Picture 1 (cartoon, rainbow, N blue to C red):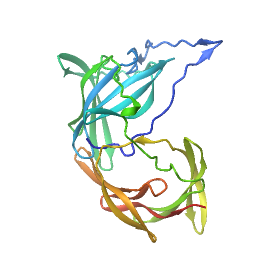
Picture 2 (cartoon, one colour):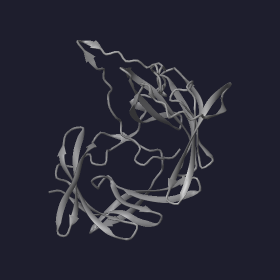
Picture 3 (tube, rainbow, N blue to C red):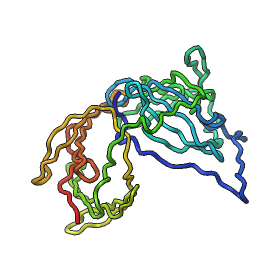
Picture 4 (tube, rainbow, N blue to C red):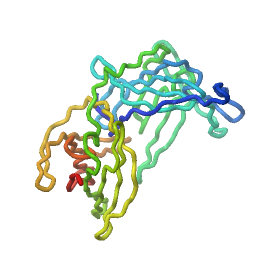
Amino acid sequence: MKKWIGSIMIVMLLVGCQATGGKVKEVSLTPGQGQIKAPWANFPEGSWVLYKVLSPTDGMEYEYRESIHRIANGQGVIVKSMRVGDKWQKVGMEPVSLLPIGKPGDKTRATATVKVGNKELICKVVDMPIKMGETTTSVKNYMCDEIPGGLAVREMGGKEVRKVIDFGTTNITPGLEEVVQIKAPWAGFPKGTWIKYKVVAPDGKETMFKATLVEVNDEKGIVETSELVGENWEKKDAHDVSLLPIPRSARQSQLTMLKIGEKGITCSYIDMTYRIGDMATVMKQWMSEDVPGGMVRKEMAGRCVWEVVDFGTK
């Protein structure tokens, strides 16, 4: 099982109930005119779906599942997990609306039968071509209201990349104690820590940036990004970063040494091949816990596109 979503993985939010006068506001999950049922609507808490997934990075297959929790006021939270050996590793959560959604026009969809165990499910086929440069890749989703989350099969470029193999309503979410965790990229660094890095555009033009940790508390920090314009640093933006431990990928990485100025940095190195239809791009990453932000260098298709040139503290 391989990591396939780079930087997949930070645990998200709580979903609360809206209240008026001490009473929970009631919402209807029944579709009205011009609407259809939301994919997770009307499934009880603990409902789950299990998929066989083909990784777009290396072509390997693994098992992935989603389950719904914290249902309240037309919302829920989806817990995502991947099988690592004989255990399930939680890789993230995300909110989901259970309210009816707008019907995508009056287009008549083709139907297809998908077999899941002994069940034969009638699915609607939703074809969504995706254009990447000069290449267009066909993405087909086979959707069925009987499946939690709605998705039965996904095809990309004529290849099946996700298929449901089971679903049900038993709560089988893994506990947090089953999750092997590592330090978050900015965790452990004091306020004022900074990195300078260059970004290389496809035409070879280099742009220098600086990222500075300007605020730190127990769970999150704020990173401010600036761009070097002439001889001055101009602020671009600021964003929150989580300092909580994150799930570790089961992907095995190699150790190697890189130099940043006069500093020798021990890095973990991985390469990933991304495939969409007939297109394939190799991405290489060098990561280190000794460098603020974690990333040291990134290459795409054999070209350096991102590289740290210095780091330190104020």
